Image 1 (cartoon, helix red, strand yellow):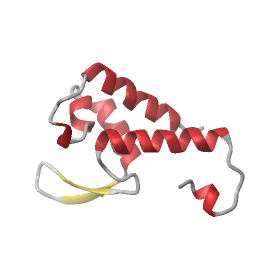
Image 2 (cartoon, helix red, strand yellow; image 1 turned 90 degrees about the horizontal axis):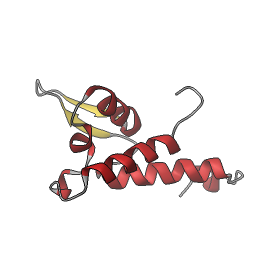
Image 3 (tube, one colour; image 1 turned 90 degrees about the vertical axis):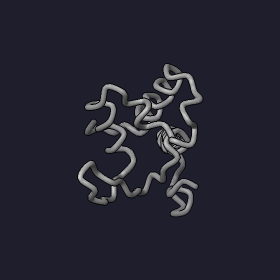
Image 4 (cartoon, one colour; image 1 turned 180 degrees about the horizontal axis):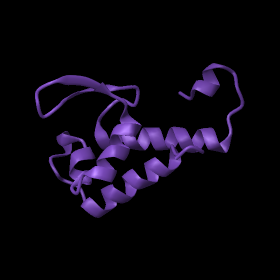
Length: 98
């Protein structure tokens, strides 16, 4: 549910697009947008925020679709379509500072 709805604020198309992007990225990754635990290569556990993590993966990882996609999908998806869905989700959550 949109935070704006809970706070009785106006629901705009920008809010709808943002929430759609969050939902799409949560479905693709299988992760919660408010944060998730990630184990680093050296074994340290840290909390990551979904959107910055996805942006970092896209920017720095050659196999970013495979890294971002929910492991429970076991690679049973079209890589190109998944990449398009991830990029669309990122466009929906883009703000003025991006």
